[in-house]
Image (cartoon, rainbow, N blue to C red; front, top):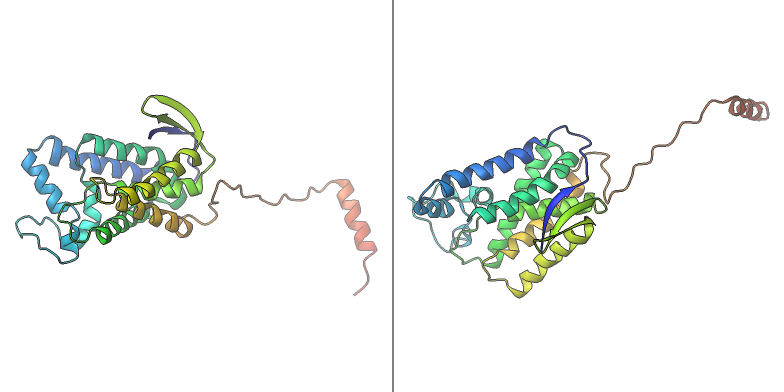
Length: 255
């Protein structure tokens, strides 16, 4: 278990990660007004009304009209802005803060927003396919965050990131070490604890979506796996080069 703290990875294409900041702000605002400042009854109603309920999505159950806040198809998205508590929110937002800016940099503002929402939706779908008759609402940005992590490790596996290991030991590591271990843990837990309180299916779905979409949604010319783009160097026009060119022209056959 680790917590990401910081990455030494500057932005190259954008000046400010506006979408990442906006998503963090929106998640915090929803939690404040439907959880922290609201009575418990309001928090529960928000989870039911905005959360993704597999049994409703797959027509095994219906949601009472008074409980529905948005049309059912929108819950594939809205569930990602509702969190069950402070630590649930904080853990997701820390990951988004550390890794989201560079993925946004690679995709552009609009592209990253579409990517983020697509990972959230696919994560919810995978969760629903695994527990299609469940009436428990799925809430949290974990599916979307998992997609961001997958995209980041494909884009920047060798970047050094500071992580807090076991919540107490800070270490600088190449990104692929903690992130691939984290990704492996999600799939391992999916097999050993598929019916637990954590939706490992949503995590796995987000990872798959992020790993696939990053290949198609990154900006043109943005490399993968920290590969550098080598630009051919121009030949310098020194006297020696000019003499060689003239000599070659003199010896060239006529046309």
